[in-house]
Image (cartoon, rainbow over all chains, first blue to last red; front, side, top):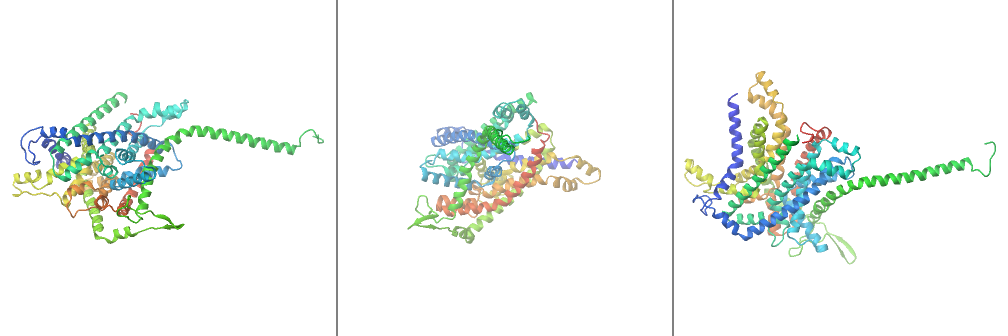
Amino acid sequence: MNRRPFALYTAMAFGYAFLYLPIVLVVAYSFNASRLVTVWGGFSTRWYGELLGNQQLLDAAWRSLLIAVVSASLAVVIGTASGLALSRFGRFRGRGLLSLMNSAPLVMPEVMLGFSALLLFVTLQQLTGWPERGMTTVTLAHVTFTACYVTVVVRSRLLQMDMSLEEAAMDLGARPWKVFFLITLPLIAPALVAGWLLAFTLSLDDLVIANFTSGPGASTLPMVVYSKMKFGVTPEINALATIVIVTVTAAISLAGWLMFRRGARVG
Amino acid sequence: MAHRDPSRPDPAESAWWMLWFQVVTDLFRGIGALGRELRQSRGRWLVLSLPMGWLLVFFLVPFLILLRISLAEPVPDGIPPYAPLAAFNDGVLHLSLSFKHYLQLLGDPLYKDAYANSLGFATVSTLACLLIGYPMAYGIARATPATRMVLLVLVILPFWTSSLLRTYALIGIMKTNGLASQLLMWLGVVDQPVGILHSDIAVVIGIAYNYLPFMVLPLTATLMRLDFTLLEAAADLGAKPLRAFWRITLPLSLPGIVAGSLLVFIPAIGEFVIPDLLGGPGDQTIGHALWTEFFQVRDWPLTAALAISMLLLIVVPMLVFESINAREAKPAADAPGPRGGTP
């Protein structure tokens, strides 16, 4: 009985090492003074300086953040409406269609989503002159695929949730909108936050769909990083990765701590 | 009622009026009820029309355009570079449907290799994820709640950081004279710089690295529901741990294995970035072929045909996934689980 936990712990350690070793190395080598990525040339913050001086990367980062904030916010509204319809409206005409349209983008390859979105934008532009390819089209495409992820999060929260509070409010004469804003919304707020964060990161990370739907002069951060990676290894990317990792870790820890505190207080 | 009074209405006639009155009041009542229902359902309609409209315009319509363009003739220098399907010439409607792109996909060995590569990479990386992820999920499921929370967050955390940047990290490790090679030389395993970048194995490692959380999470969820007293019972009855695992744990965790495998396999089929950055020249996947066809060859109809054919590869696993989802969602909808209720 003693040998099995040891084997189990070894296997688990291997799994976590597999997940974290590359990340640790990226963070370590972001402080490397040498241009050669694999040779340690002493501690330096040189690449952070070069990163902050790289206007192309900064512009792309700003653009990506803007797209991510706008598309995540829209996606939360649309995804919540979907989740509500799919979990609270019972049977209605078009339920199957809505369910299908929500699950298909989750499994369809990104290249396919990106290309078909581009075809829509090209057709629309031919017919109406709008939209010009650029940040708008990337945002529209991002809203569409991230909303489906928000739907999954919100819907599962709604299905787990006890409906008796909503029913009680209805019985006491509250109108549906009032019930939604006073009862349902506060109860699913953690799911909305999680859905927003998920949509935000998915949008921020997306290379493929952005590459298809973006236009000249509107490269997002992953697009610039990708072209840099194709061109050759650039140590600034280590610095960028470190900043992203630190930010994400801080944000997740904060969100987890807030939710934990809230959970401890309420429940 | 002895005799008819001409000033009073005929009973038959009055019955008719009664009926008429009834119909009219029913009608008004019906209209009122309909109005009330409409007023009540207006909110519902608003809630429903937003996602329905958005997804119809930005998901379903693009898909139909894709289908349509996969049947169009290419126009190499046109903007956009495809011919319309239907055209009026001399007052006659000409429809031109061209299936030649699909035939081209079937005939060209380039695409056959791409399909084979996509399927191969997806299968092997799914198995790799299962091998690495199962012990992790098992350990997480058996840990105390507090430890479990930390271990789960550690699994999810990498997923929130950019996949592109993490793939970049792998390049630095796997390339010739990279960090792995230096470690091996320092250990004395090899005496010359080695590298596995731009090879099949690099692509598999890359996909497994990126999709491991998708395997671990559903597996953990299934294993957490597992009744571990069954294992104790098996041990009491004399079963060796390995046998107990094989006969009890593994069959009971099968739903998690299937869900996790599909969650890795499906996106891995269409993966473009990882094979592009980590694979060699012979490692073209179907996603890769689509990308090249669009950005370099600029043959939009062929790209569209590739996209549609790609869909066929994922339709089967997707249907399996949907049926499992439907089965899982049903009990959850009927009765909230132990985790349900208010926070």
